[in-house]
Length: 85
Image 1 (cartoon, rainbow, N blue to C red):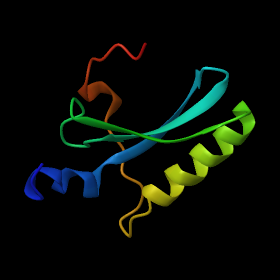
Image 2 (image 1 turned 120 degrees about the horizontal axis):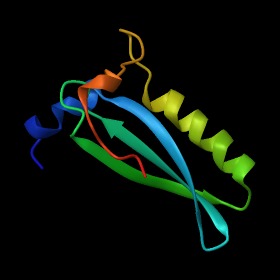
Image 3 (image 1 turned 30 degrees about the horizontal axis):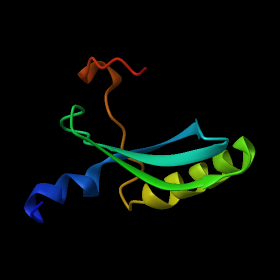
Image 4 (image 1 turned 90 degrees about the vertical axis):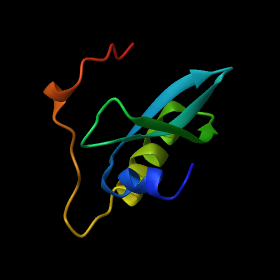
């Protein structure tokens, strides 16, 4: 992708997701475009032996990735219709 196409990441809402995978807990960061919530980037950042460790790491990485002088960016939850399953 070109740099211009990735500019939305600067204003993205950042969430984390913890999923069980093969006996471990995988942590992924979800970057959601605040202007077009259908544009999402999912990046797996690690896996852990316990769900608690994965939650701690996910929350920490979410806070680090979401740091912005303007405050935390949020997506309008009514702006999209996606099945979250």
